[in-house]
Length: 388
Image (cartoon, rainbow, N blue to C red):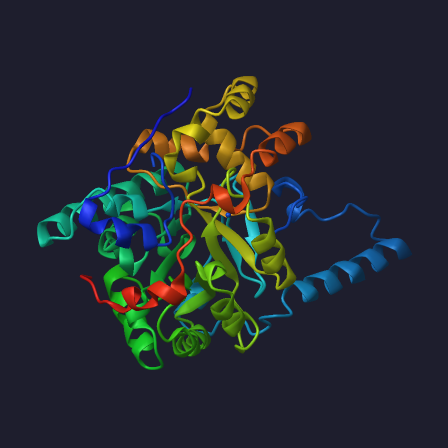
């Protein structure tokens, strides 16, 4: 059941595409090691409500819930986002973010679609049609989490796919990202309104700063205002793990803390230090490149093939199931309806503790990463505008 996947990058666009916070590769992620699998993540202990012990436990749970949202106690505004009613299909785990909002932990990444088309008007038209079809296929397969970005040039197709799927907008967790040339007080708010227009919606569930470049502090101030207005339900930072100065400027100094940190994470690069840092601030980890850039060394690894054979699953499904049991959110991408379906068919089995440890042993640390850009050297690159 092994599936081999690969991508082809236009040579002139390679630097730009590798700098994007990729949603996923292949046919196409906040926890530290030891996080319980999703089946126990939000479980409520069974107790006798008539006993003093039950009352004590209820009080403890209330204290834990309060601790979980201490960084962003201000709920999203009473604007359009208040209509949201996201409920994941049976089996797909939800995570409660540090502002109390719930997000499905498995989604469709749409960055891969932008790797398949050029940046000409004709190419963007084809790109948006491919993205539309992928979104329709994913929503019909049961996905309720979509990940796109202005940098992918496919928000129009994603928005149209939502409409064409027939799934009500309020039942879908929609994520997008702002490009650094859109950062700055006033500038970012205008960019958010333009993004809403491209997506044909009046709110976004999760909005990231795509890269730690440009005026990310000014941009975050506008994001906070958009959050208060109900245009956005949750705020995130993408690739900020690559520049600690920028990470701490947002996490330590801003009024509203991020709910999600999107990073490269897969069995070859398991990112323990970054995961521990996010856990300190109760920030959920979401993983791009969950399938390791479709690296054949990963997809053909003996360890994963043996585990896959034991469960009657593909290596890709084993990798994605590992992400879920580690507590991540993951957004694998695909344009193939069969692969889109395969990627979500991972909730009818569990990896054993021994299998989890075998996959953890595959970690190559920072050497296992495919993307580790020095933003201090390359920051100016990201302020270049591009086609919408």
